[in-house]
Image (cartoon, rainbow, N blue to C red):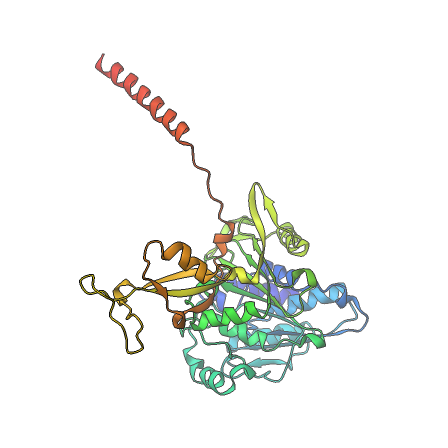
Length: 424
């Protein structure tokens, strides 16, 4: 009966394309998230009578929680599972509880309310967490409570690293989940969350978004980011990404991040469902999961689809290069501290990878052209961003001058022959 009810939810979501993304994640995306979440923990979850806590802060109709429970019971029938969640939409909340009741599941830990402003599981820690927060939705309604927690509690609360711009609350949900991770000494936690591309790069060095990313990478919490095919969701065709977050990396993954480009792993639907035109087949899910598990750089059809990078590869420094004010080529104007006064019109901001030395860059790249330049160290900022496609970009080989010269000559000959035929 529970499976029939779930199928009705899916059909309803397909008919409600305009808002379906708010409460329904495609079933195949959930299966992939669950596979990635548990593939490294199969040994643990086969222990007799083990207890595990699952959590979804954007529970919707409960699809992620149900899929996670189903997977765990399939590999360990004796496991005891506590399913917890919170949902802001009252209709989705009601459907979630009804579905769980039909399946004989415990609904006492499913709550109604705004997760960001009214966390009803504030004292809890969880073993596994899944979420698909709304893409690019502002958090204005939770602004007062979120800012109050950020400024009063700092890193003892959920939002210590920083706050994103008001127009997109995705990173707030990510920080919320991280705050609910079990300490590593208690077994640690694993998180699978679906985000669009904006949280990976929006915001320059020193911004709230960049500070959040910096906190996550510098604490070695990102295990993998998987790019999904476009047109998988019912109400958006944009690129989406699954982030796997954990505080219990294996030794070989420590300090590393795995990027998987799974954008080409899909099958076209015979009939579009809103903006959903593609789906993931079981063999796609198995392939992506195997690439993740193997933790090796991989190529397919000559194209790289898996990269292994260091946390530092996502970091950079924003440096300010100043030059003095010179009036009519005279001596530079100095401040009261006898330092050259910077000319704002000549100021340049440059981005350097964390691996590149600032002084070396100044000596080799700046001073040869501007001997009077200096780096204003007080303005140097560290930022983090994930420019996903840059890591998979392959420079196309260009033709040699000899080859180009031959092509030009051949083309000239062809034009001459055609012209001669026309004149005759």
